Length: 260
Length: 260
View 1 (cartoon, each protein chain N blue to C red):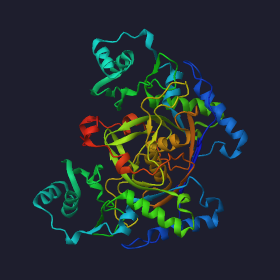
View 2 (cartoon, each protein chain N blue to C red):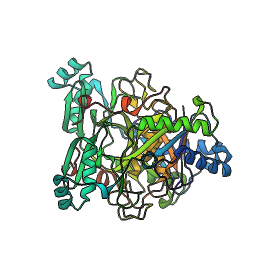
View 3 (spheres, rainbow over the protein chains, first blue to last red):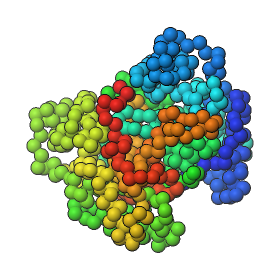
View 4 (cartoon, one colour):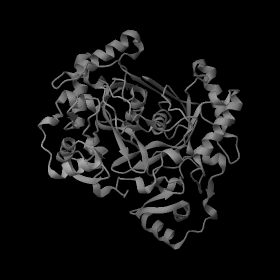
């Protein structure tokens, strides 16, 4: 049992460019934090939450809008709703399915299976005329960051911090966005408590906790959107064992979804 | 800017019964925690996250299933899907609208406007043949807890800790539940960042962060489902000013919802 969670936003990273060694930046930020607070040195159970934005930038999942020719549908939608037609075009290109396109809102299901506004195509915190796409395979991104961090920090692979690649998603029925996990490495993103007794000794039938998503949300509280601190160390969570992925474990096939 | 979030599950409460003075239990648990860790004493910006279960128990939002006569529809659904017909009956009574009722899953929109499995009617962590309902007005519950806590802790009302009443909800498209806020007191549940510049100096057009929900999720990581620790102190979050409510600020009127 955890009982205590600490989430610390590491110092700001340098501006990330395509091809940059993001894990080296992360290791540098972590070392700076440790220099002032030695108790932040790597400990078993540590999770580093890395926002999608810096992962996409480092991987080159970036589109220069000046190279984009919007289709007529994108132009019409953008004109009607005061949006950038080139960005609408990129969202449509990235979509496996358009879930909703009305009142200026464009919700798609991405190739990964994520259902979100603008398919994760994002113009915030990037240079003008540029958007980031979601990483091609965020679980793979998380694994790669974890492996390289282990080497950089001189840790045995099994003792490397777990990684969550996070992004901010809206959801139905409630205003506001929360951060969720797009990819994970080093733990199972769900805690399946079915079959365990509750405090009254009764066996729980349906409790599966989305631990990775809750970790992403806790990290967002520590970093905020405008602090320039895209890396958060989360310590104290009880991490389900195993090497799960968001794609296989958390993304729900549409045919399983009972919400409308 | 926060940069650092601490979530500490307070020591277990006594078993809560209808009519109990829940804030007195909370104050007692907090005092026990302070006795071993003086730095946990009330500080500006503290939030206490209180799970729905203990709020409902204290308020008497509890149903003895032995008194429930299920309607034929509830009996048929329960027989087909191996559920308790009396509990299904209670869910239907609590529902403003049935969103989905198939494959053993019953999703409703409650009177509060929450869309969730079983309308928040819950048999876990309660005695046999008993279920809890959602609190009648979770924002009011939060305000009442906050006011009484201020008195018990001898704090001026404005310096009382903020309160979140939390519950675990599933969501579309992703497996697993996360904790969200059903009610709040002492802060605004949304951080509306529209109009603020991002790190690239560009004005953000659509960023509204569901701070109260992220606080609820962070708290769940610290308490877990079976620890008997329903109260979590969350410290360090940047709390939006104002006296918002979940009902007015977060629950989305169905006609505004663009998700399908």
